[in-house]
Length: 156
Image (cartoon, rainbow, N blue to C red):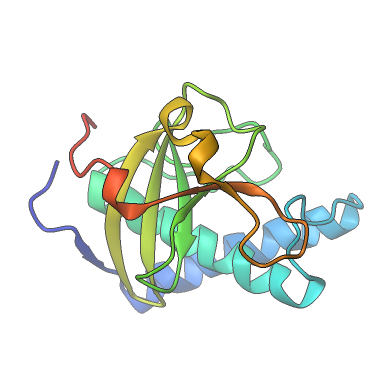
């Protein structure tokens, strides 16, 4: 694992990743797929774009190839890892019951060009009943994994 967990993307990398996020959103709309996890229509574009940029950042940090996997809903995000992104350092990693128990999830925190690897966890360990919550009160239950239980080293 690289020592510095801060990733600095170029504007060209941000543009490429954001384009992938837009393409994913357009394809979802074309196929009649809405957001599965309670995100509003107004938020869908930004969530998709941020997610793609976070995947690009993780790929750069890890040295793993990132294809963007447009149209392949079953593909892992980057080199066998699943990437989840948040903008706020205080937010937790969100896991869903449908997430594969064997997958390793990485939480990426950041915005635009600056991202940080905030930790890793295998889904089976993050799906702890103590983490099952609906913090927004909008019927959006999920496993909200605290930062303190995330691993900071993982074999790439």
